[in-house]
Image (cartoon, rainbow, N blue to C red; front, side, top):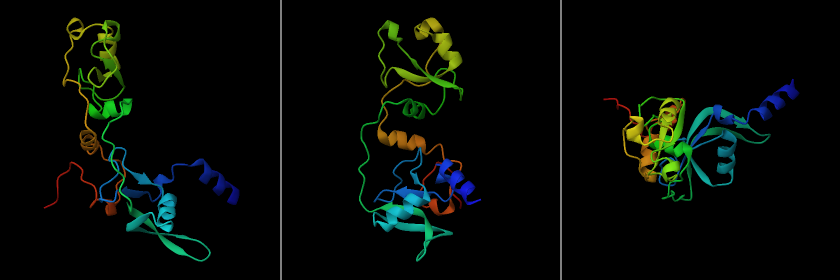
Length: 194
Protein backbone atom coordinates (compact mmCIF):
# COMPACT_ATOMS: atom_id res chain seq x y z
CA UNK A 1 0.00 0.00 0.00
CA UNK A 2 2.86 2.38 0.80
CA UNK A 3 4.25 1.72 -2.70
CA UNK A 4 0.91 2.67 -4.29
CA UNK A 5 0.85 5.96 -2.33
CA UNK A 6 4.40 6.83 -3.40
CA UNK A 7 3.66 5.98 -7.03
CA UNK A 8 0.48 8.08 -7.10
CA UNK A 9 2.24 10.97 -5.37
CA UNK A 10 5.07 10.93 -7.91
CA UNK A 11 2.68 10.63 -10.85
CA UNK A 12 0.66 13.62 -9.69
CA UNK A 13 2.94 16.63 -10.22
CA UNK A 14 -0.10 18.84 -9.96
CA UNK A 15 0.09 19.08 -6.18
CA UNK A 16 -1.56 22.46 -6.74
CA UNK A 17 -4.90 20.67 -6.40
CA UNK A 18 -4.21 20.13 -2.71
CA UNK A 19 -3.77 23.29 -0.62
CA UNK A 20 -2.12 25.65 -3.12
CA UNK A 21 -0.63 28.88 -1.79
CA UNK A 22 -1.38 32.23 -3.40
CA UNK A 23 1.93 34.02 -4.00
CA UNK A 24 1.95 37.79 -3.56
CA UNK A 25 4.72 40.19 -4.46
CA UNK A 26 6.21 42.32 -1.68
CA UNK A 27 3.55 44.97 -2.48
CA UNK A 28 0.81 42.42 -1.63
CA UNK A 29 -0.38 42.05 -5.23
CA UNK A 30 -0.37 38.68 -7.02
CA UNK A 31 2.64 38.09 -9.25
CA UNK A 32 0.16 37.26 -12.02
CA UNK A 33 -3.59 36.92 -12.39
CA UNK A 34 -3.79 34.66 -15.41
CA UNK A 35 -2.46 32.19 -14.71
CA UNK A 36 -2.90 32.99 -11.03
CA UNK A 37 0.43 32.91 -9.18
CA UNK A 38 0.17 29.76 -7.09
CA UNK A 39 2.72 27.44 -5.47
CA UNK A 40 2.13 23.92 -4.30
CA UNK A 41 2.07 23.61 -0.52
CA UNK A 42 5.52 21.99 -0.48
CA UNK A 43 7.15 25.00 -2.17
CA UNK A 44 5.31 27.42 0.14
CA UNK A 45 6.47 25.56 3.27
CA UNK A 46 10.04 25.38 1.94
CA UNK A 47 10.10 29.11 1.12
CA UNK A 48 8.77 29.94 4.60
CA UNK A 49 11.35 27.67 6.22
CA UNK A 50 14.12 29.38 4.19
CA UNK A 51 12.74 32.80 5.27
CA UNK A 52 12.03 33.95 1.70
CA UNK A 53 8.34 34.65 2.34
CA UNK A 54 6.03 35.78 5.10
CA UNK A 55 2.95 33.69 5.72
CA UNK A 56 -0.20 35.83 5.65
CA UNK A 57 -2.91 33.15 5.86
CA UNK A 58 -3.00 29.43 6.55
CA UNK A 59 -5.20 26.41 5.90
CA UNK A 60 -6.61 24.36 8.76
CA UNK A 61 -4.44 21.44 7.57
CA UNK A 62 -1.03 20.60 8.98
CA UNK A 63 2.12 18.89 7.77
CA UNK A 64 4.30 17.00 10.19
CA UNK A 65 7.95 16.13 10.54
CA UNK A 66 9.31 14.04 13.39
CA UNK A 67 9.88 17.18 15.45
CA UNK A 68 7.64 19.89 13.95
CA UNK A 69 4.00 20.49 13.14
CA UNK A 70 3.33 23.30 10.62
CA UNK A 71 0.05 24.73 9.33
CA UNK A 72 0.00 24.79 5.53
CA UNK A 73 0.25 28.36 4.14
CA UNK A 74 -2.60 29.53 1.92
CA UNK A 75 -1.20 33.03 1.20
CA UNK A 76 2.48 33.95 1.18
CA UNK A 77 4.19 37.28 0.48
CA UNK A 78 7.65 37.50 -1.04
CA UNK A 79 10.13 39.36 1.14
CA UNK A 80 11.95 40.73 -1.92
CA UNK A 81 10.01 42.71 -4.51
CA UNK A 82 9.97 41.15 -7.99
CA UNK A 83 9.82 43.90 -10.60
CA UNK A 84 7.09 43.11 -13.16
CA UNK A 85 8.18 42.87 -16.75
CA UNK A 86 7.31 45.92 -18.81
CA UNK A 87 7.59 44.13 -22.15
CA UNK A 88 4.85 41.64 -22.96
CA UNK A 89 6.06 38.51 -24.74
CA UNK A 90 4.38 37.84 -28.06
CA UNK A 91 2.99 34.36 -27.41
CA UNK A 92 -0.11 32.51 -28.53
CA UNK A 93 -1.47 32.55 -24.96
CA UNK A 94 -0.91 36.31 -24.53
CA UNK A 95 -2.49 36.95 -27.92
CA UNK A 96 -5.60 34.96 -26.92
CA UNK A 97 -5.67 36.76 -23.57
CA UNK A 98 -5.45 40.16 -25.29
CA UNK A 99 -8.38 39.19 -27.52
CA UNK A 100 -10.45 37.82 -24.62
CA UNK A 101 -10.28 34.23 -25.96
CA UNK A 102 -12.70 35.23 -28.75
CA UNK A 103 -12.48 35.19 -32.52
CA UNK A 104 -11.85 38.75 -33.67
CA UNK A 105 -14.01 38.19 -36.76
CA UNK A 106 -17.20 36.52 -35.48
CA UNK A 107 -16.79 36.72 -31.69
CA UNK A 108 -17.09 32.98 -31.03
CA UNK A 109 -15.20 31.21 -28.26
CA UNK A 110 -13.31 27.95 -28.48
CA UNK A 111 -11.34 26.20 -31.21
CA UNK A 112 -9.11 29.25 -31.59
CA UNK A 113 -6.08 29.68 -33.76
CA UNK A 114 -4.46 32.88 -34.95
CA UNK A 115 -4.66 34.77 -38.22
CA UNK A 116 -2.52 37.37 -39.97
CA UNK A 117 -4.77 40.33 -40.84
CA UNK A 118 -2.49 41.23 -43.73
CA UNK A 119 -1.53 37.77 -45.00
CA UNK A 120 2.13 36.81 -44.98
CA UNK A 121 1.82 36.11 -48.70
CA UNK A 122 0.87 39.79 -49.08
CA UNK A 123 3.82 41.05 -47.02
CA UNK A 124 2.18 40.87 -43.59
CA UNK A 125 4.43 40.27 -40.61
CA UNK A 126 3.94 38.26 -37.44
CA UNK A 127 3.47 41.02 -34.87
CA UNK A 128 1.01 42.27 -32.26
CA UNK A 129 -0.33 44.76 -34.80
CA UNK A 130 -1.05 42.16 -37.51
CA UNK A 131 -2.12 38.96 -35.73
CA UNK A 132 -5.50 38.26 -34.12
CA UNK A 133 -7.26 35.32 -32.51
CA UNK A 134 -9.56 33.59 -34.99
CA UNK A 135 -11.78 30.53 -34.92
CA UNK A 136 -10.94 27.81 -37.41
CA UNK A 137 -14.02 28.57 -39.53
CA UNK A 138 -13.16 32.27 -39.98
CA UNK A 139 -9.47 31.51 -40.47
CA UNK A 140 -10.29 29.06 -43.29
CA UNK A 141 -12.76 31.52 -44.83
CA UNK A 142 -10.16 34.29 -44.86
CA UNK A 143 -7.22 32.18 -45.95
CA UNK A 144 -4.64 34.38 -47.66
CA UNK A 145 -7.20 36.98 -48.78
CA UNK A 146 -7.58 40.53 -47.58
CA UNK A 147 -10.37 41.33 -45.12
CA UNK A 148 -12.45 43.00 -47.83
CA UNK A 149 -12.04 40.12 -50.29
CA UNK A 150 -12.98 37.60 -47.58
CA UNK A 151 -16.00 39.68 -46.51
CA UNK A 152 -14.78 39.89 -42.92
CA UNK A 153 -14.23 42.76 -40.54
CA UNK A 154 -12.35 43.04 -37.25
CA UNK A 155 -14.21 43.51 -33.99
CA UNK A 156 -11.19 45.41 -32.62
CA UNK A 157 -7.97 46.57 -34.30
CA UNK A 158 -4.96 44.56 -33.13
CA UNK A 159 -2.30 46.36 -31.11
CA UNK A 160 0.49 45.65 -28.64
CA UNK A 161 -0.94 45.38 -25.11
CA UNK A 162 0.84 46.71 -22.05
CA UNK A 163 1.61 44.29 -19.22
CA UNK A 164 -1.01 46.07 -17.10
CA UNK A 165 -3.65 45.59 -19.80
CA UNK A 166 -2.91 41.86 -19.93
CA UNK A 167 -3.04 41.68 -16.14
CA UNK A 168 -6.44 43.37 -16.19
CA UNK A 169 -7.61 41.02 -18.95
CA UNK A 170 -6.54 38.09 -16.80
CA UNK A 171 -8.78 39.31 -13.99
CA UNK A 172 -11.79 38.56 -16.20
CA UNK A 173 -10.97 34.84 -16.06
CA UNK A 174 -10.83 33.73 -12.42
CA UNK A 175 -9.67 30.15 -11.89
CA UNK A 176 -12.06 27.37 -10.93
CA UNK A 177 -10.71 27.25 -7.39
CA UNK A 178 -10.45 30.32 -5.14
CA UNK A 179 -9.83 29.79 -1.44
CA UNK A 180 -11.63 32.17 0.93
CA UNK A 181 -8.32 33.39 2.40
CA UNK A 182 -7.28 34.70 -1.04
CA UNK A 183 -10.24 37.00 -1.61
CA UNK A 184 -8.80 40.02 0.21
CA UNK A 185 -5.80 39.96 -2.16
CA UNK A 186 -7.58 39.35 -5.46
CA UNK A 187 -9.56 41.95 -7.28
CA UNK A 188 -11.74 40.18 -9.82
CA UNK A 189 -14.37 41.89 -11.90
CA UNK A 190 -17.23 40.84 -9.68
CA UNK A 191 -19.99 42.54 -7.78
CA UNK A 192 -19.12 43.47 -4.21
CA UNK A 193 -21.39 42.51 -1.35
CA UNK A 194 -23.21 45.40 0.31
